[in-house]
Every structure is written in structure tokens, then in C-alpha cells.
Length: 70
Image 1 (cartoon, rainbow, N blue to C red):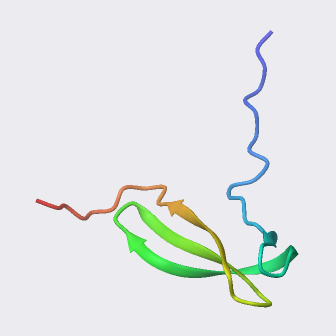
Image 2 (cartoon, one colour; image 1 turned 180 degrees about the vertical axis):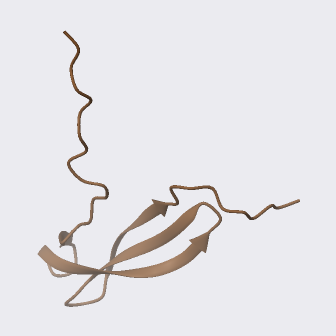
């Protein structure tokens, strides 16, 4: 008996709150684009209250770009 392939529950995880050491509690966050990379983008999570950097996330491109570096 063959089983159906598992469905993805989500395509991309995005944090809505992270612990802020400056505020000493879990705080809502917003993201800021830091860098556009060859294979994706680098985003930074910032505390909405004090703007402390709480971490980064790299979002990879799903398809290959047409950029060739020689």
C-alpha cells in the first residue's frame, strides 16, 4: 500500500516575537532587509520597542538566477 507524499504545512517560518535581552521579555519583532545575496536575502529581526537586533534570517531563492560570476 503506497502512502501519499507528506504536504508541507508551511513554506516559510517567520517569527512574530523573540526574547529581547534589553527589555527582558519576549517582544514583537519586525524585519529589516540587510543584504541582497546571490542566492537569496539576509533579513534582521529587530525588537519593536528598543530596536535591539535579535537575530538574522537568510531567505534562499527557490530558482537559480541568471547571474554568472567569472
